[in-house]
Image (cartoon, rainbow, N blue to C red; front, side):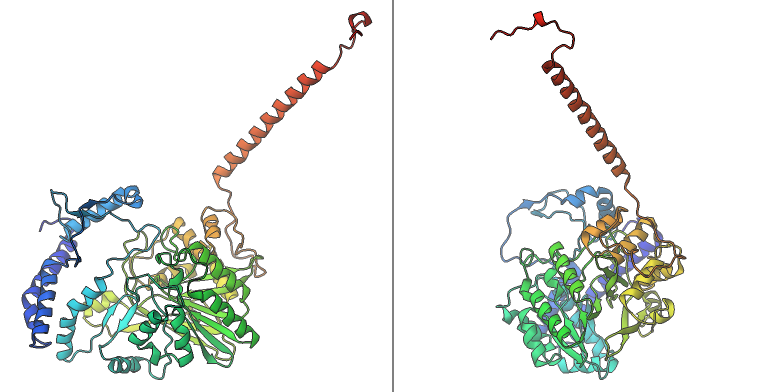
Length: 550
């Protein structure tokens, strides 16, 4: 291995390679812990081969030779692509070849969309680590395997549930589907006639023992349900993966799995009985605050959902989403600029380190809400987190600690749209200490995610206050949006708010149109003048010069 890059990176790469070689040489001993039968030994051989030689995709038949062109984003971001390829070469994750391979896949840059790896990655992850986990458990260590949007503790459901009860005793669980829960990832069936699909998910995940009978029947229709928390409060667990723009099955449908119709009926029912509503889901609407206009919903579904929220804003008191692994919030406004709805985006237990420019990583975290069961008002939440850097140095993940409390850091006595709107107004000053706190919490105190220039600052503000895609683009360009967050009755003159700026190109456009109109006016005037002169007789002509004969 050559010493490319800095010394720390070289040592890290060398350490990884040494560990892989060590794992490969001792894997026979690890797999022997599981069983002495032929099946276990065969499984151990497979794992050993993957660790030593890499994972080979199991084709049913050899594909034809093909060389595919790189996608547009890869061609438009050549420096970024070259840099990333250089990193992979330096880490010996890839190697350079002189002959054209049998199949050449296109290089893809995840720019404007979320990109993940092979769908079989989860299978290989679990298969390779199963032997290691078994050995650790045999040694007396309590270990769980965690992979992205799902959490599993044991192959035996009763033991897994018991482990969950240790950390969350006497707690009702309300599960929702993530975009990595189906196979293939991101692809959710949309037809309510396919109840066997969602019924299978419910049974295999054992969520049918968590949800009630009525909730389970609703789940069969499309992975969504409604539950009663108290006499005055309902909870809607939605399958927002149906609206995810990575789901190729639902793009052209008016209402995938009739979820929007279900939500409409449920909200009407709650309104009829004077009940408040909590909504929980995985994939959020709106625009990601990090990156360049990254969205999750197909545009039409984003618009439909926002319209539904506006219609029932008086009874929807809280919405909680995940997926983006960041700590943020969003506020929706009506046509008059009044804040009517809010969404809280909770960061993840998964420490996702994104390759998207400007996104970075996050520490693992979990959130504890306090709310009133009678009126459905969320009073505050406390965010807890695990400092990965300290945990790796110490060699243990037990030191979870309090990150912040909304009632302390943001001085919020309640979590309401108007309160969060006031917080967003304070963020308009980039140097404001509240915005600086928000930046730190956005990545769960991850050390490398604290810098934010003017463009970054504007992206955060527009993502928080403009959930409509068109309004977000207008906000980013400096124009006036349809639902402008500063046009509210909650005005504080001591807080400076950015005035809308007209883009420079608009001045040139208006000036050009004015010039064209002026030239057309001159042209028409000249034509009219010439025509008038031809039709009019000379003012001093003699009678003899005029002919009266036909």
